[in-house]
Image (tube, rainbow over all chains, first blue to last red; front, top):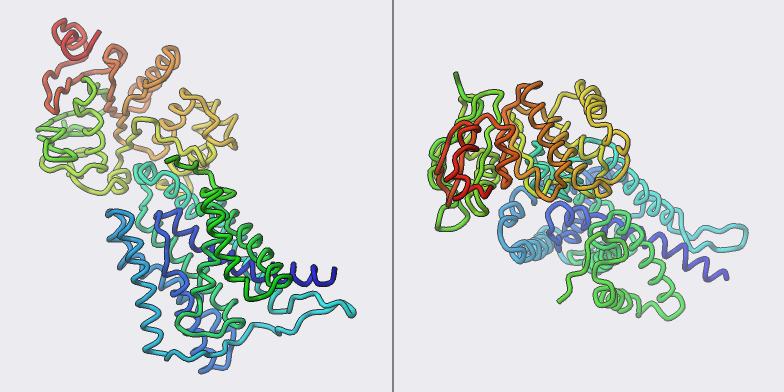
Amino acid sequence: MQEFLEFTLGGISTGMIYAAIALSLVLIWRGTRVLNYAQGGMAMFTTYIALIVINRTGSYWLGFVVALAAGLLLGALLERSVVRPTLRKPPLNAVIVTIGLLIFLEGLAGIIYGGQYRSFPPAYSITGLKVGSVALGISRDGLFTAGAVLAAAALLAVLFRYTPAGLRMRATAFSPDVARLLGVRIGRVLTLGWALAGLLGALAGLLVTPTTFLYPNSMDAIFVLGFTAAVIGGLDSPVGAVIGGLLLGVALSYVGGYLGSDLVEVAGLAALVAVLMLRPSGLFSSTSVRRV
Amino acid sequence: MTEALAVRDLVAGYSAAPVLDGVSVAAAPGTITAVLGANGAGKTTLLRTISGLVRPRAGQVLLAGAAITARSPEDIARAGIAHVPEGQGVITELTIEENLRVGLLLRDRGQRAAALAGTYERFPVLGERRRRLAATLSGGERQILVIARALLTAPRVLLLDEPSLGLAPKIVAQVMDLVRQLRDDAGLTVLLVEQNARIALAIADQGLVLNLGKVVARADAATLAADEGLRRHYLGF
């Protein structure tokens, strides 16, 4: 029973990281129907920026904020410069461009920062919390992780539902031509979507890197799991992305806890394959399956 | 007098053969112009080219004398042309009120609440269901919604593409009545694309007939409606 509680709470906090990556992928997919393979690479890059700021200034929170701002800028910049020209071309072009971006960012990070593993500080203590003598399986930092992603998701939900910018984003996602005919400048909307995705990715990088070390490929595995979470959620549903992240995080935590930690990545990939085979539109998507 | 909307020698199309082959239209302010013709005559492409969704290869589009040719659809909407596309263009994933609010986005903040209240007063059917998803509306109600949404952009010119499509005759009559009111009460200039020539000519001031991308007839509505040969050849009534 104690183990079960530990694995569940631990799974929730890692699941929230998958949820953040999944949300960033969903934001981009909804706006541009592009799957951004560079999302993990972008998060890795902004985490390096955070590390530099932290080392220079000694302030974790300054590094945190600078990385989030860098994610916002990087997302907007990449959309405007390399992604926009692919949107009127066949979908494969955008896929190749984002894979190219990933390789570019990882190579650039290797050149600038070197390939060695660097440790990255957590926001709060990573010692497991206890109630009396019962270990909860979650640390103060784990609580912060879950809280930060939940807060980001809630802010996003408020943005979508209650602000003009959110209405523009939803109208553009569902019916781009109708939105344009009503005067919505969809180019700006797409840039905003990429910027927000860059910010969410940067947040995920900051939250996960204390447990993985920082190196040019450090976000690859997390990206795959975040992508799996997004697919579970249906790829176009923000709520689905968060629930998908939580389900995956908890499931993988049980796999790691009860069956052995070597199996976690295999189980993650197995989950991806299973969802794509059995329910390719995800659990929460509004789009219907195309029969072939 | 300057035309509210003028199209001069417009050439446009999706592949090598042009769908529009030198089409001209002149619509005086506060009039309804019916654009008639068979399937594939180029009616929808004419509207899509005016509103910027299709880039013209040659020719000009003038809004109150100012050239808006080949600008982006969002800029043309902001200049004052509202295009209600065929197949209605309701955003079914949004609520009725959210659909209307998209139309309000380019209005000044201070005017939005009053404009929305005015819409609900004029179309009670929308007000009663404002929080429901637009997907729950019937075909006729959707047509009301998209016209109401277009009006919220405060347009000078309204482009309507087949508003009668798929609607029961009684609903069609209501929609046509609404279009007529928009001209009579608000002085709106309307370009009305219709397959159903009879009902369009009944409310229009003038009409033109397209065939294979060219204007084959152009006259005031009564003259067109009375022309036996034209009716048999192109209009089918």
